[in-house]
Image (tube, rainbow, N blue to C red; front, side, top):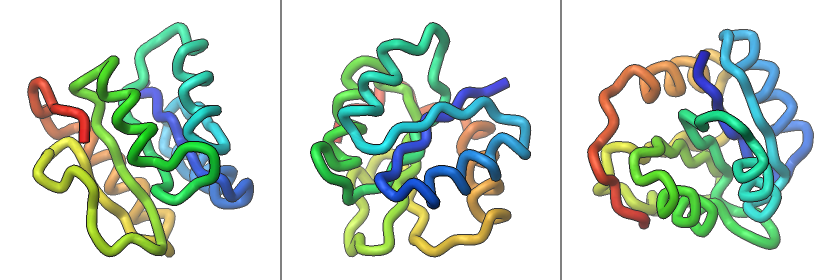
Length: 127
């Protein structure tokens, strides 16, 4: 069962994404910002198969978080979510996708499933 790390500073959004993804059968770890996500990822005993992160968060934004996690695991797929992003960071990397807020539960689930079934881009470089 794939493990997904969900990171968003809005508790309601984070909780809703967790419920949607758990209902789809995924194991979900969650964090309130990038610094918390790094702590969660370091304390997790298994593999994290996908990072789903808001781009705009206090303390550490999604792009900085993705850079840190990609440095440790270059093949980690990343799904950025945001309601305020004009340009997708790392858009040249096929392992990085963007989902604008608001999105439906079905769109989130379909996007995540698609990212987890696509072959990973080898040696993805940090953005």
